[in-house]
Length: 215
Image (tube, rainbow, N blue to C red):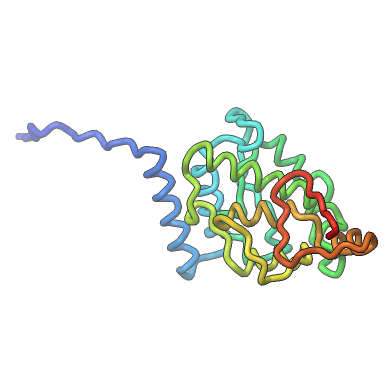
């Protein structure tokens, strides 16, 4: 005779967005620390980025088109950033094509970083700005969700010919945005020097226009 349990089946509680995102982050962290394949780590990185961004395009907010986790700075350019959460943004298929429309091949590292169009500095600044504002609007800005290592931030400074000792305000994502919105130091110093103006060592462009006055 078959005896059926009188206990009702307990429905599994649906995880909240934050719980799903934290779980995806833990899986990614464990994979990066463990000896798993690069393909599996990238798959977990992609899953976390899409979950963190609410499974919609951060640029146009579309949920209908296919979504991809896009490396803001290509992993072929700076390999260290391939799993870092602050180097990813969710884009729909249309916005993702636009991000790769100029050049999507292996970069020539002997050329300036934006010489081939793949590392468009204005586009990277826009991506970091979009990501930063999205994080602030949704009140989820934290170093875990938007992590960029100090080495990566130092690399950004070198690319912009900024002194490595110059300290930018805010967390990693805020610093990345500010670094990329600076006029390259070598160019700025040359422009000001031609007019007899010396650039202060601690100068950071925070606003749209900066005026220099000679004493």
